[in-house]
Length: 408
Image 1: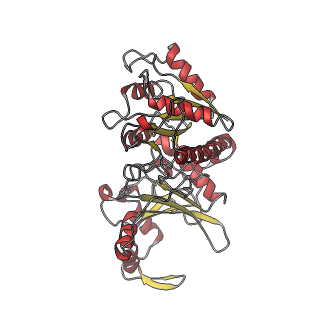
Image 2: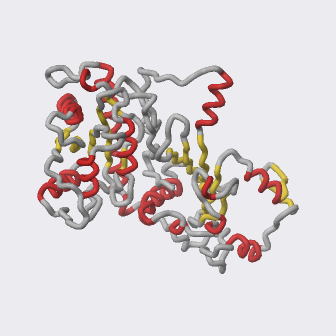
Image 3: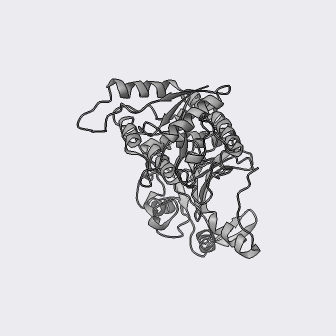
C-alpha cells in the first residue's frame, strides 16, 4: 500500500514532520509512506490561480496516485497552521485530489493537548464541499509534550505510544482498503440506486406532486387516510391515530421513514427543525431523497441505501462531526422488510447517547476512564493509549465500513 504523509508545518525543525518520519521509517515493512514538503506552496489567492503551478501539481499528483494520506498538524492559536490551510485551499479550488481520498490525522504539540483542537478543525475542513476527503474516524494520535517525546535519533521513547500508533496505523490500512474497495464497486453497484423515486411501489401515493409543501394533506385526501380517533390495528396493538402521534412524538429519538421508492414519507415532529439533532421540516415530507440531501452527499446516500437494499448490511451507524465529551450524536439506518423478507425502506433514528451515559454514571457512581489495553474499534470514535488525551479528544463520525454514510 502506498500512502503520502504531509506535515502541516514549514518550520525548519518540525516535530510533526519528525513524527511522520518516525511513522514512515518504523513501520516501513507494513506500508510505504512518502513524505511531502509544503514549503514551496504559495499563499492561497483566488484572484491568482496557481493550481497548475509545479509546487501544487506535484503534491496533487502524489495524492491522486496514493491509496491514502496521513496529515500531521501542529496547533497554532487553536487551529491548523496557515501553510496547511493554504495547501488545502489550493487542493479544493480548481483541482480536487482529496475528493474521496482516505485521510488519517495525527499531530504533536508542546503541551498535553497533542494538537486536539487543530485536529478537530482539520476534520471539519477536510469534510467541506470541494475538499471531500474521507477522514479516518476515532483513534486520534495526540502526541503531547513532544519536546520530551523523541530521543537523539528521532525515535519515540515511550513504547506505549509506539504500540498505539502501530494499532492505529493497522486500522487505517484496513480503512483505506475498505474505502477504496467501495469506490472500485461504484460503477456497477450503488450508482444504480434511484434517489429520484421514479419507480412507484405498492404503497406510493400517485398523482400527488412529491415536492408539494402540503404533500401529507393531499396524500391523505387521495387515500382517504384515517385520522384523529380512528383506530389502527397494529401487529400487537390497537391505537387511534392520535395515540400513534402521541407515542411517536414522545420517543427519545428522532425517527424518519424512507420507503423502498426512496421517498421521504414520515418523521416524528418532536420540535422545530432548527432545534432538532437532524433538522427536518414539515414541508419536506413527501420529497424525493435527492431533494432532502445536498448534491455532494448524494453518492454516499446511494451507498448507504444500496447496502441496505441489497442486504449487504442491515444496519449502518455513524456519529456526526463535532461530538465531544458532553455530546455524542449518532445516526442509525436500519433496513425494513415485510413478512416475506422483501426490502421496504429505511428506518433512521437519531439520538444523543451522552445523556444516557451521564444518567448511568450518576446513578451508579461510576466514571469513564481510559483503558490503556483496549483495542478501540475504528468506528468507536474514542481515544486510547499514551498518544491520546481523553480530556482534549474530539470525536469523528463513525462511517460504516460498507457505506461511507452521508452527513445531514
